[in-house]
Image 1: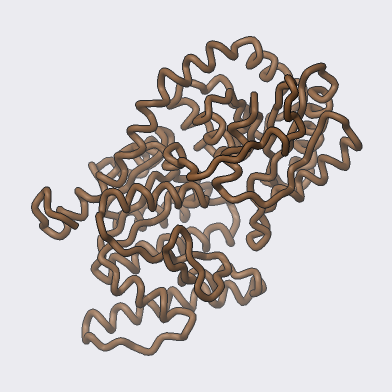
Image 2: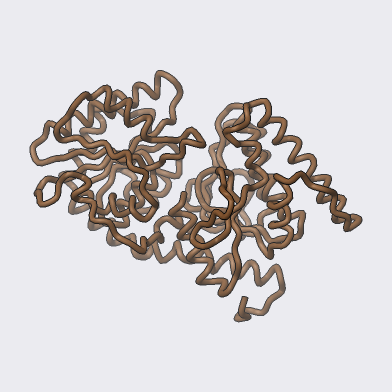
Length: 413
């Protein structure tokens, strides 16, 4: 997520020369926090997702915030009177009110599961789009994936919410097809690759010593894992990954490195937890390393660039590997994975997380070893144009902004 945001900021800075930025985040934000030199504050959603609040309090905060901000905006638009706002809501509302435009960070968060909490989260996220639009601001998304929406109400919330977006870049064809099935077929919907393909670290890290292969001719296979499935199905996935890692570790000339891609303990999304369970299943292995360091987004891309192969559940680990020319197998937990791999002509190297077994992974990996040359050739034939296309998102947004403000093309913004 940090890499997506970093690349997005870089592109917007290049396109909107001299513009000021302010980031609103659902994570815990300390006083004076900045990201890439930009001030960061808590968003209106923060209280509804804060780990400090229990489930009931989160629900109360979510519905109270949405109801009150609707009243606040309505009163302000009709009478120009600004009702008092609680301190937690004052700054993010003022940031939106002063802004010239809201740009939603790219990613795959505009999706849902078939439970009530997920439905409320979708409502909260689209409320942010509506609120900015109600304040008279152009609203753009940025290289998003959409869905799935298992419930009809979720699909309805998304289709209504997206009516308020002025530009809807989608990052793969599957999302575009889904929006088409929801009736969103106008020219606001454009396909633009994930901005993570544009992420270029301003520093490089020689990760070979960290991986334990400095000065060695061993080939390094990276693995990323995550928590995703319910109960026994997650346990089956972890057992399959453990058995697959065990098989690789017994092969001559291979070293396996399990990399914690995401360590967001605040949101209960920490790959180290899954990695430790797999490590327990494996026991001590001479040729297996578990990396638990909390890398920056710059450092971790260098780690993936030092691999020879990747078997990635975290899809942005796959993107980091691909942009470094490292062949990767992708374990799909959302349709963004197969969608982007299909757009790259690499769809045969995708395995749904529900179908993961040690045998299937072994078969796919052996195929990858055999087809490495073909894979890399395909990658380098499509990636330059694909990455160049990803850079068009900011230009598309600038054109939309010029239209919304009736600014002549070529005017400095």
